Image (cartoon, rainbow, N blue to C red; front, side):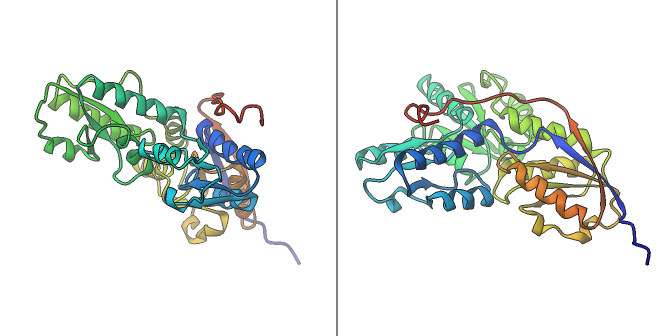
Length: 318
């Protein structure tokens, strides 16, 4: 009996994709803390927005909590890569807790900019998504009332600051490059004297992953993004593909794949958000190979070689 050949699927895999330097560093901090102090090590909030990563670290001895009050006395606690308000390490110190800050250095850079601008007497317009841990952490660096959050161009239009000539702006690091450019243009148009940040706040990894999706989208019938539903940078990758006129879906694992989405798809784009490990990409490729003759091709738009130092005290453990 003749075997039925599988339909061919051209698979264009975007590069760069997956883990960025900040995520690598944050995960390593938790792993080294467990090695140094022994389990359990507590982590305030998800260290990064990825269930697979969180579950892997739980298996090694990490315990994830939402608030510092859930951390017992005498055990180390790690703060997530998204950053925390200043009140959190202050409270940890008051309780005598040993803590490690896994905040991405590029987020910390925005924190320091916010402090400097407020010290100069500026009011900050912050472009970001309400409720995102990075936004909460950044607002928590400066006195209440020092910053105003805007999420859309309509929010910019509605801004009525008390001193329009004393404004500056900063942005969340994981935004849509195109959306943010529109909002920055709207801010400059409405407030010509507004002070821009010294450098781009949107992080290199977010920008690079969006550019990589744009590079493959025109050659694809559909795009899959591996990432978590609460991952800002992953959601933006879906939006980037859709803006190129290509259907796109966010999935967390290969098991979440909806085969109906691939009906009539001859060329599929694949990428992963900055919190998603390469292991999940390979898992999905294996899943696709069950039904397709997968012809895999990586499309690299840039090469990343950035690495961040570990916190003092963990470097020796590494």
